[in-house]
Image 1 (cartoon, rainbow, N blue to C red):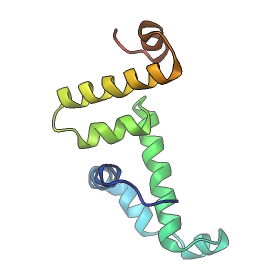
Image 2 (image 1 turned 120 degrees about the vertical axis):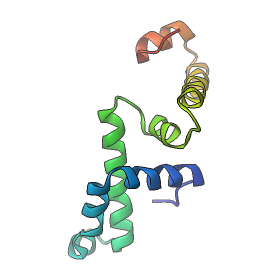
Image 3 (image 1 turned 90 degrees about the vertical axis):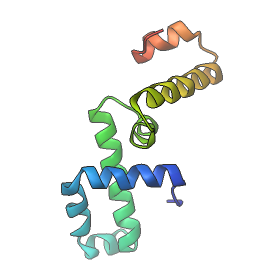
Length: 109
């Protein structure tokens, strides 16, 4: 697993701050489980953190990149604007009509 970007790392830090039970679980991982997977404890912990972050995003009906934006945006308005902009880029890359894309992803046109 490669090193996370600064923005993603900030989101992970805030996620752990807001979810102390997950931080506690990560701090008490069994080193033998990491060894059995051929990973260092740090690698194993990073992977479990990523999985917890993804699961939390899914619970909120967000993609992980959306949760990253949500946790790092200066305001709700900034989050919504950034989120919409990225979704527009994805729709363009996919060659999809914006209205059709919004309907598919439950976004307001």
